[in-house]
Length: 238
Ligand code: C5P
Image (cartoon, rainbow, N blue to C red; front, top):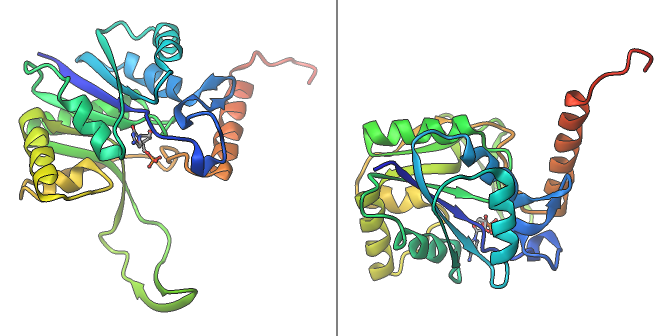
């Protein structure tokens, strides 16, 4: 079967300073989640989608799924306490016929269809692959509260993003072991690495940043506005 897509969207908006759950915070007039759904709608080879949601958001999610033209079987499920719990819950709902599962954070609205396709193709070949970008800044080790104690050489350091794609059996085993051992990681690749499996990186994009703070949301809004401006018909007298 084709790949299964998991979109994790069950987080709160606390760090954003919003009472609305993060995936439903408006960005350019549409909820954050809608951007990931639109990207997913244009990826070939996806057979189903599982979306984790905060409670009470099912109907709003269905509206966005329709609007994005996501013409796939979609299962909606409440998330867990942490992101990792949400992924595990969604994973249990994926079809056993899917060879590849691709996981994406709804909090990254600018992931492209090409980002999805890239990690799916690499995972189909290599077992596991994530979108990532090489670190551009200088990395400092800081002791509490504000004293630099070292500089971490940045050669070979990359920033992990989503989408991340894995052979389904590998990801299930990684989550099973993590649960049994009480391991909590901030991404799925880490859990798969702990199995001793190799994980490839595929070029992500600087624009594929995660919305965490109000500043991130303001930057994202400026990007959406600039894109809308560019695609608007130009007036010759402007
Ligand atoms: O909190 P953070 O932005 O790191 O979460 C990354 C993604 O995981 C978000 O899209 C969020 O909605 C999702 N998430 C989830 N369940 C949780 C926590 C986060 O689905 N319990």
